[in-house]
Length: 433
Image (cartoon, rainbow, N blue to C red; front, side, top):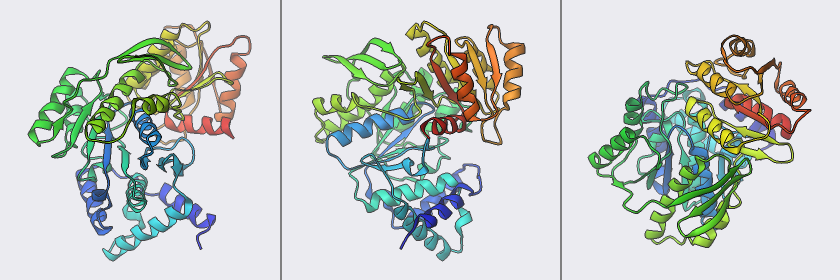
């Protein structure tokens, strides 16, 4: 009998697993472990989602459409904003604790048979393996697999026969190690293209990125999406979401904030169109019904009754999209930002972007050894930003949200919680708890 305590112990062990540098050797090791487990990935129709920004939105929209059409859909998306179990879902329901314990025991047994132990795998590697085994055991009809750090060294690249590979926006991300120039990043992402897979791509992709992806598709005998892109027009944008015209369908409400979500939606609809051409039953009515009810925790998620926007924008490109969206809303008051960042080389540029649209920045230190301290962020804001903004230092997530509410007490200003996923998770859980 598996109890809650068993899961708690295993989850702590997974969370405490050693950090490892992604590499092709690690990918090869995961492929070998999958073979020991009976190649669960080869029994799955996997839609592999890769890119720098937008994977969560793209994956969730696609999952909702497939689920609305009564397909049995597995979805892996990491890291978790809430409970770790929510990284692995089937038809929207998280994996159960008993299933995690059982699968971990199966994986551990196979590793021990080959002279390894629990410590062989990193945290992310554990969750990817658990997801693939679980999805195969549950006979899912589709699996939406979102990559992690990205590129050929990402553990999800161990999947050998993806049905389809979808690229979201690709840009330089200094948190990850996919490259220091856009061309290097594009080449790294292109290496995950497998022979026979169908490739679709974000419509706003940089020209050179698109060229690299096309060339690799041809080189490995994969197939570029042959069908026309959907025609999407943004009619209006607000924190509550977008009003869109999609092809000949007017006034579709997409409850995701941010104009760039229209481009993510284009990627999703390319996939839907391809699946329709292959005979899968995905009606226009059910597709639109699914889109009208989308909700994605922590990704441009607007909570109306609190007037708070949660967005896990952790890199320069993501923060730029957030800034552009806020400027397009023409809000009556500048937002109050709760901001925590990892201390990478773009941190100061990110602060500059936030300062250009904020009335106040509440600086908080992420719960990560790579986190920029709240004191360092506040010092930079006070001495280097050009805008006249208020800056406060919060000791913890609870203090941060209380300070934010205090600063907007005299107005109906939007509170924006963004930056490091560690900050977002802590404050999101503080609010929900």
